[in-house]
Length: 501
Ligand SMILES: Nc1ncnc2c1ncn2[C@@H]1O[C@H](COP(=O)(O)OP(=O)(O)OP(=O)(O)O)[C@@H](O)[C@H]1O
Ligand SMILES: [Mg+2]
Image (cartoon, rainbow, N blue to C red; front, top):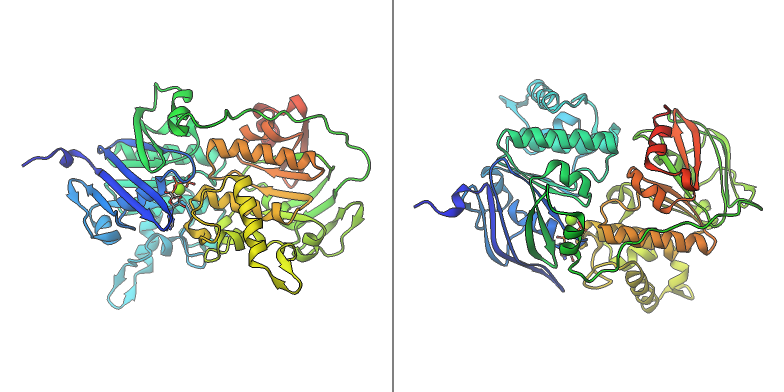
């Protein structure tokens, strides 16, 4: 008998899933045809990644059914899902840094010739897939030496290598700059044209419109509606997403800043080879200073050096006008410097610790009573931050790894709020957070600045710089190449400056 399901590359029927204290899926329905690109959209914690985990067999539904190509997945798990043709790129990168690109692309199934691993074949076939996708990445390079963007592209190449029937991409572009995003979108289009069904999770509506045929909007664990990507207005989509319960995401208009007196932070002729050869700027209290620049222009390196994580080869960092000799992370933290790293999984969070511990870790002094840490204080401090940042979590003690991606990101920001940092270095702070939470973060950044903090704001999403910054510096070829102020801060101007045209 031919059932309806048989025409679908993947389907989910009335799927539910609860975790302790959270209903992640409350009856999700989903059908995907071969060759279709379907976007999954919804605010942080809506259940997108959970639905994906059900389809990929990583986790089992409490009730309901998942089918791949018409075949029920049952209790088959990841292995069975893979056999049925599901390949997944997860929200958090999962490459093994010390292995090569090729070894990573064949992870779990290195080709053999007799008793040996067939490195030559692995290298050749990896090179073929990379070339097919238009990627110029040497398969023999160690993954650790690749940029975050390149690592993301290797993850996609690894999934494509499995010739999937269903390719699942959970926020594949959140770590990428505009040019790499275009590359990913093109690759996705090509994959879909060959008949592969694609599930594409993203918070960026412009991207979704470019790549997807249709959008399934999720809210509170339900698939609310599936609409065509082309002719549904942004307003309609956002309303479906938020369910009418949200305040409008208003634009923050920065007040004019008085740049007088002693800067909070002064950077003089800073060199952090090979990318930064001579950077100078000042950050004043009350100021949000944006840093534009192409991917690989050294923005992350600059922030890390200022925070004391990487050695400074030449030049100086001053806080409150006083030079800091040999900045170390501990010294800079004492001076009020807080860095939220771009790669939250590798550097930002301690996965098995609770949300609460992950936040108060930045300053135990504030939650101690005498020589020991007070659990009551930890709890109160964490609860306040959870409220302030709108972090969706069952309890404050929930391990942070159990939070949705966007909520983990908010907790990383909570850490520096807790430490009461005066100089905030935010490296891609809105990565993976939903539209509403983005607006919340902009507002928070402005509030902190209004209270006298200075913020260095790095973002590859150029659209957000005009919304939050007083000034934008563009990094190019190792130095600052331009400065934009106030009304000059537009996407076009930033783009022009970063490309140094
Ligand atoms: N392993 C787990 N244990 C406990 N709770 C979980 C687990 N996985 C997910 N959750 C919870 O289920 C809910 C849905 O999470 P999910 O990761 O599916 O959201 P999402 O839509 O992908 O959000 P984001 O846009 O932030 O990535 C969240 O409240 C999350 O904290
Ligand atoms: Mg997610």
